[in-house]
Structure formats: structure tokens, C-alpha cells
Length: 209
Image (cartoon, rainbow, N blue to C red; front, side, top):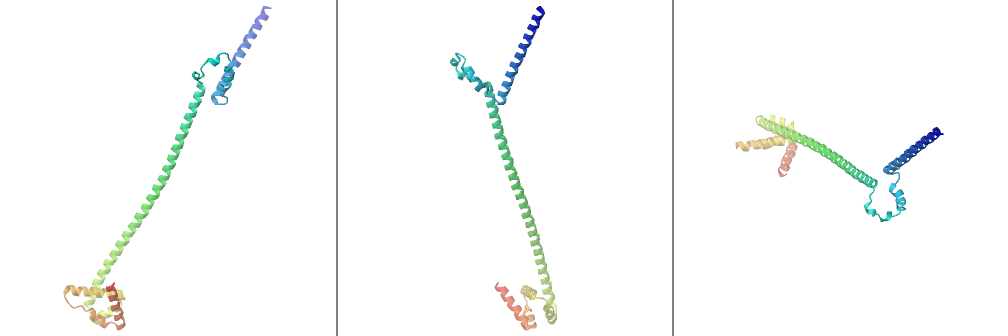
């Protein structure tokens, strides 16, 4: 009989332990669900607490829900973090746009620089060609002045009108600088009359311009 009584007591103790563990697990589960936001413990407990006699005498303003505050703080932190992420993303996009614009301007400046260098090189080449042309005209004028008039005319007939005009002008300039009479008029009289008239007309037109 005593042995049977002991067995009953042991069973009761085990049942109490199981009940305690179940209640503890229930409270832990409720706490976790409330923390994760699956349930709102305050909304569930408010009707229960309100039914307790004398609870209405307690100032609700002095009662704070730590879990609610924790959730609100996490929400604020998450919102602040999101705002910072959006601002950072926007700044990155702005930097990419400015970087692209800067690259475009650099490329444009490179092209402009290359064009300017080409223009300078072309201008230098034209200047050199012009100087070489002037030197050649001066040599031709000196050479023709030293030739016999008939040979000079034969030489002039091998040239185009503009070259002949430039040579005649160089000869006139040399004669003026040296204070002597130019032989250009005499050479014109020896040329074919038709071509001589054309050359004189072109010389007059160029002087007017």
C-alpha cells in the first residue's frame, strides 16, 4: 500500500513538471510571436487585465510596454537606414552622371585639341609653302631679268597666268627698290597680244581688289 502511494506521488510530481514545462514553453512561444510581430500581446492582454478588479485605478500613462517601444525603435532604425541607403544610392547615381559628363567633356576637349593641332600644322605648312612660293617667284623674277627678252618670253609662255603675274609684280618691286626702269611692259609687248591683254586685265582686277 505504501509502495503504491509512493508511485502515485511520483506520477503527480511528473505531471506537475510536465505542466510547468508546457506553461513555460507557451509563455516563451507567446513572447517570441510578440517579438517577431506575429501577435500583439498588448491587444490580447488588455481585455484580460481590464477585467481585474481595481485595475482601472492604475494610471495607464505610467504603464509602458517595453516590447512596443522596442518594436517602434526598430521600425525607426529601419526607416532611417532605408532613407540613408536611398540617399547614398541617389548620390552614387549623381556621381555616375557627373563622371559620364566629365568623360564626355574630356573627349570633346581631346578632339578640339587634335583639330587645333591639325589646323596649326596645316597653317604652318601653308605658310611654309607660301614662303617657298615667294622665294621661288623671287628667283624666277631674277632669272628672267637676266635672260634675253626672247628667251624670257619663251620661259613665261610655259607658265600659267597667275605665276606670270606674280613674277611681273616681283620684277616691278625689285626695279622700284633699285631705282630703275622695269622691263615688265617690254616683256608684255613681246608676248602674244591676246595673252598679253588677258594678263594685263587680270593684273588690273587684282589691284582693284
